[in-house]
Length: 125
Image (cartoon, rainbow, N blue to C red):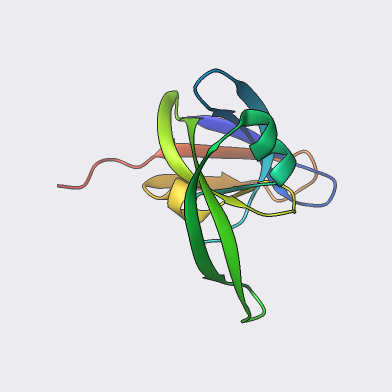
């Protein structure tokens, strides 16, 4: 199970450890159910971790416009295990998207200081 909290702006925050070959960094990421990717990070974090560039991807933003993202590869600690994922470069706060949450149960107590819990769903056969 993974734990986070709700901040003063009513954002669900989850601490995520991001790793390249030799460096790790803890980032507080906002859970964004409107984001269908894995994780976004700003260029400063991507540069500090010297992440490997994978390519570009086009995404549709909430207002319907399209945007091209630079995509990098990194490992994150997810549910106690390292998992290699795509990272979209975005000059916003880090965002956890629905691809990273896939297969998990998300609970948010939507009050300041509320608990955020993420737990693996039972495997469906």
